[in-house]
Image (cartoon, rainbow, N blue to C red; front, side):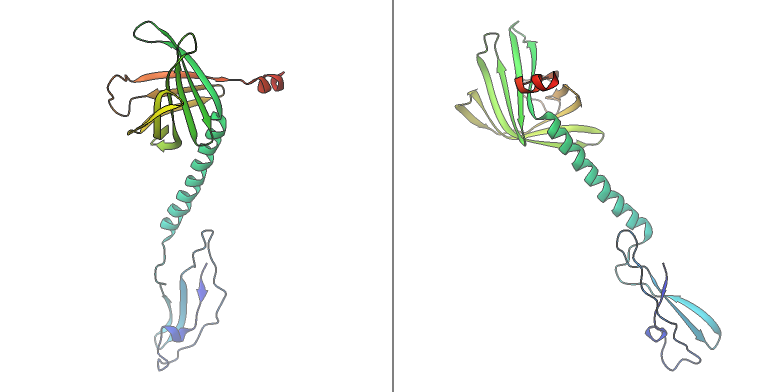
Length: 209
């Protein structure tokens, strides 16, 4: 939108034939940015229009970029919030290690906390680890960032781990696929692609029936 302001703001009162245009209410666009003011005056040479730029005025393309960026940020936050809600609960998968042992890996997500365990076939805990979980976007990939990690042979015997794990993941209803140890090389830990299944609680099973 365009608005007219007093011509005396731009022209001197001594200018010949100067006439003040009637002011109109300023308008703001969808991002709340004030439009450029336009001054219309009559000089000795005839009508002239002068655009008076306001300080710190943003051009339309920049305003569009800012608005789009804000919208995308809120959409990403909403998407990650939905993923955290979907990941809540316990997940499990079975695998065979390099020694031929049958192992069960479990992950339990409670809000922004994650608990990881590896158990033998007789349900003995081999590894217990826990930390803070955060979902982030890395280019086109969805990633899980695990930090402030404490790990040990049991939940009562934990030591601080000076490392941050970043895993790429996909989530599909009751299936959670994670690519781990691709972010960096770690001694004794090979890159893996694991597929976890959601462990349904007794309450959830009754509700599904």
